[in-house]
Image (cartoon, rainbow, N blue to C red):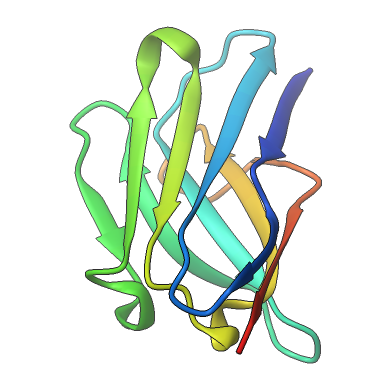
Length: 118
């Protein structure tokens, strides 16, 4: 069993920063990539940022480019999402996910709420 546990969410004001963490534990699994998704009320879940576990290559949805940074600590089995210049439209539940192969994300965390007030 693989567990992903997110932390770092909270209530902040527009322009503030937050750093989300996602710690992976449980059985060892081949890791292709990890990603941060978010889902706002009434909206579909979207992939915000992803990181290739072996190369460290990253990708972002256009709405967060230059504001969010995804990074990893292989030794700690942890992935981070640094979120700067937060906007009210960033308000959502943020989920961490891990992909064992290129076919898609296999494991999911329970999510952490991020609320940005104007």
